[in-house]
Image 1 (cartoon, rainbow, N blue to C red):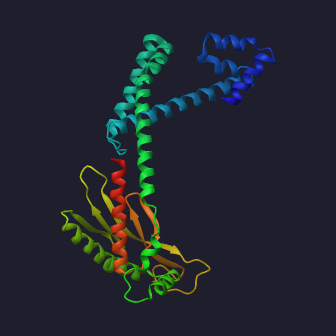
Image 2 (cartoon, rainbow, N blue to C red; image 1 turned 30 degrees about the horizontal axis):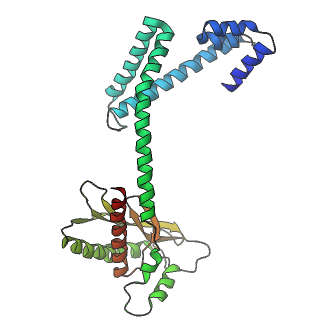
Length: 298
């Protein structure tokens, strides 16, 4: 648009091609071809321009049909073929009828008229976006914490800080992380679940797959609480000391972490090696923050 538009303005104002301005004033639909007539091989350029216009309209129509089809299917993007063909054909038929009835002007008028109710929908969507952003800010504020202090809980002696220091330079293998999640984390979730049951709150523990454990508290008419521990693999950093030997499947340059994931996504901290009481305190603390979040947005 910039190259063609500026070139046309230059032709009219600086090169005296007033016929181009007259052609544009008479019929805007022919302005592109009137512009291309001022260059060599005008016929070839006009053919290329026609192909570009066809591709533009076909692509726009295809995108519009896909969006309408998804909206009518509750956001599902894997809709039946006949349904996509129906919406694409309907748009083409409506456009053809308007062109036959009143030409390009009728089609442009209909486009502008149909955009007015959609503008109202956009205003409603804007309100929904602002509301969602406020919820996101409230959730972010409720998650501010210093999780490092939980790692020293649950030790019977004064060696908590020593174990924490050792875990910083420990690079566990896949088997150890899977075993930790399946035993220590699962037992901690079980204790929290039994305690919640005493308060008439039902919780569920689901082993999604090996190395992935999900703790859920379903809350009626509110955001459910999800606390999940996932096994993730990482490349061992160059500055690391020799850690645990990784399994044959992963290789010596890979180590694993047991990371906490909430409903909002990963929290980027590792609980591998934490005592059971520390894991329990972390679950309870995240649950308390979630309840505070629900209180702040009610």
